[in-house]
Length: 624
Image (cartoon, rainbow, N blue to C red; front, side):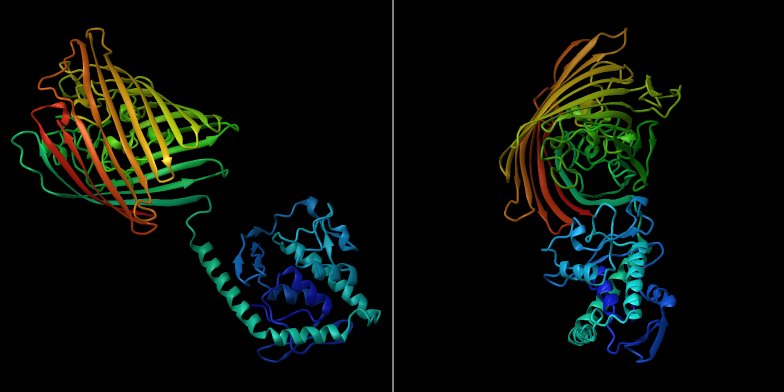
């Protein structure tokens, strides 16, 4: 740190003021030999150093820690003497309009008030010594960071004034009493000055390390790691209970802003769930509750991808814990109330707010059923792997009402559909190809908040699929949605739903949803249609037993085929399925939570032959 201080009362006062108790040591011995030479004494070595006016400024500039690139403004809290690092600013940030102008009275500075803590010091520099400069708009800007140019201008003004006073021998202005007072103060506060210097040294060292090792000035990194044990019993008849499995999912998200208002989200993901095209290795398949293709099931956990171990675009396998790009989305405002978004790996939940408090794959409900309205999951809207390319808008009609919509295409990156077949009538690119010719969805959500305690979301989606599926991943009948119709039959879906959350108090909320999906064959050669319905209701608790802990109890009906016409069938051994779930999230720390929970499936997959199934989960979530 700097060891030298300008050897004059005016210079000392100026540096003291503009540096905000700058971390330098006052000199025990000060003397002025003549009008052009100042003598300084090193506090540590006790050697005298001589400077003349021409090299004085350079000496101080070399000693003071102000770089050519940037400077750190340090503010001392006068109440508790705490030192805070203030944001750095470019030395070239001063505009041409901010040129310094000499003032002769403190009253000329419009933003300086008699109640300001430094008012008397500033008044002395202006009116007694006449060596302070303000801005052309009659402001002093005492709370902002000082640039190197401003320091040089103010220092030069004081040096000129001091030399003028010395040359004219105006002894009643520069008094020996001032120097004696300064020396006395230095002696009284020597320990504090040493401590302050050490604290500033430590702050500068830490700041230098942060600047040298910072990830990016425009990008923030956050991540989530989920490790969970999952066990289940029940399932299809004559199936033995599955073993307890240990699974994981890791996500790293990079959020970049170029303007301060936009966001480019890049997400990387790895997991060890298995399943593939036929469900082999999955918990659902071991229970006998998954579809024979793509392993859709009501026994899925909240943090499990919709198509584990499979790239559904091409039906190629994905290895356990291989790194994938699951999110690539850019969100940017174009007007005060209008925001646009677009990306090649996106999910509906990225744009549409979740109304229910049970949503949170790593923090809240433990089942896929409870987190979101099924309409949001149609067409792989929340696949967990950023299945679709999408573009849309967010229109904030008022603070209590907004409208959102998107268009999504699953295989937008494929120029043409494969001629080969995975199964009869189903291509190895089962969702088609191209931005507008493959499977696609148009989805909207109207979010309404009539009161601070009530949130309502209304959803509609129109989808077209190259094959006979819902693509929600919620139940086994998701695949072959039109029962009795070939899997390769294209379908059109119209889905409607509503979600409501009513906060009875800050810690208790009632929440639920209802949904209906109408499926029609989109082929001229097939006449078939069917309807699926689903509903859920539950109670959510915040700060239960301890601050930060949450819990949920919910009950509802998973998607169930309630109507069929034409070639479509309702199926055999029908029974209405139900889902009962409870969980309790324990906040271990700000970055770690543990959630034990379980859900019970009655008449799983709508088949009366299936046994009541219980799925238990112990989930640990790390966030950073």
